[in-house]
Image (cartoon, rainbow, N blue to C red; front, side, top):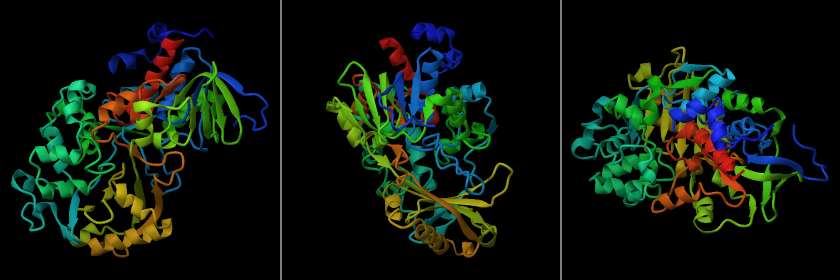
Length: 486
């Protein structure tokens, strides 16, 4: 097949509409490296989309996936009752590439994701209803903050003080004065010490004083907020857009699995890359089992926490090396439970819980059929790292005791159905990256520059979008970069 250049591809490809809208393993005993045009490392959304775009344009592509599972951080827990999502689960209204791919591959989508019962709040071990929060003696916030629930505080400041009118402005040089920590930015806006403490107990990765506010501002779905007039600050952006979002029928992982199936035997599982050598005219890739590949180009579509473990020659240098080696990743630990009896009917409190204790939040999920028989407790950042020091069994027992202490009505009414830690996953080593304060613009720009024959994709190279859509966008970007160099 004749390879296309960028212009020919965009003109002829079935993906052109989305672009316009959104502007087994190789034998171990092989004596010679298998030759291909492009090696893609990682079979998540970004790597698979890059591979499909390149294949559609006539390139021979091989995808190397370290694990035996397709999907990366799109991970459906098929072995847990209710099949919860460990990672990606919500297809936002602005996710044009994801929706287009599902339609292309015949993967069904249904409405609804991230529907949870309202929150009650536990501070210092005392449970407070949302109705009593504003007047509670434990609410030490001031002024208008007192009327906002702990889950609303950050959203209030982000939406009210969003300095950008478009999704690309965060990358402009003028945004450099905002490259400060979330905590510092909130302080300049007059956030009270109590509000900072409450926000810091939430889901910011890695923490309030290291993550750049640019990272948070980039994630605001401005087009959606314009449509809804930005009225709600209830929950995070994912919860706000839940009513107009979609989910993959059967679990999010079904979509990357379908993408991999469309690539056929080009996808090789259990191929953990250990070395990328670009000191010759072609790239030489070596896997842990000794299998070798040779290619004209390489795409890294794995988290930076994993890329750090791969030897790269010539070495990364300057801002790019610093970004790869020092961009922090946050951990999230989940404990999933079945609800044997509706504990919220016994104490007449909202079923979900926010806590300043070892567990960040306990979400009581509304299932798609209206049932309420599942619960998930999650901790992130340092809280997750501390819980991960316990064995899965001890972690489950500890979390159940914490919930019972906060909410006596849950005693005997919950049973653990499964646990998951992103920090313990060897080929993810964390659930999400966060551009660090003071370095966000440098790192964001360094991470999208090719290094020799090596190109970088993944959510950590996000430009305009977030989540699954940013991963798809990044895969498309690196494919176009390779078009331009061919």
